[in-house]
Length: 168
Image (tube, rainbow, N blue to C red; front, side):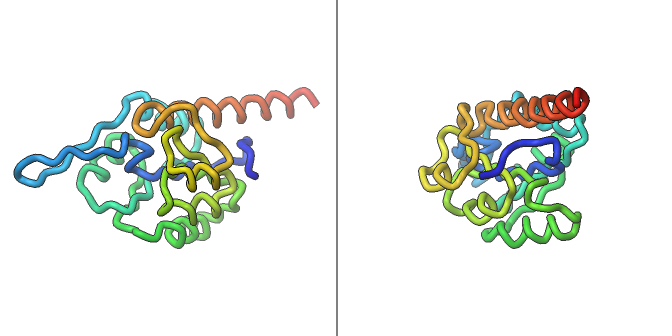
């Protein structure tokens, strides 16, 4: 079971069900829209400001995913139905060990990444199988502050370990 620490360098986020409430609005012309939380956007900003890399890894190929990623200033990998090899390649390319990676997913298609990352987290409303595989079950649901909650936990763990190390 992984624990949050100041070794964390990358936070990888699924999109639907993590940065959204897992619903989609489809207009009569087929255009899709989702609802995202500004609190989650602030959480991403706070993690990035603290020096963490944050990215989106989504199975969907949809302009809304890219648009939200641009808005938050994060890299987006989309259209990958099997996300685990993509996360593995990202880790290898960037020289990251599992204990330096947090992955947040919400459903069975995220199980590979939840197992690969050193620390795995799911929103409160995650599928039971994903929740069972996670190190952290957040108190907030997807698209409604779960990533802001995670940001607080990640940043608090970094502060706690930095101050503990300073007192040694």
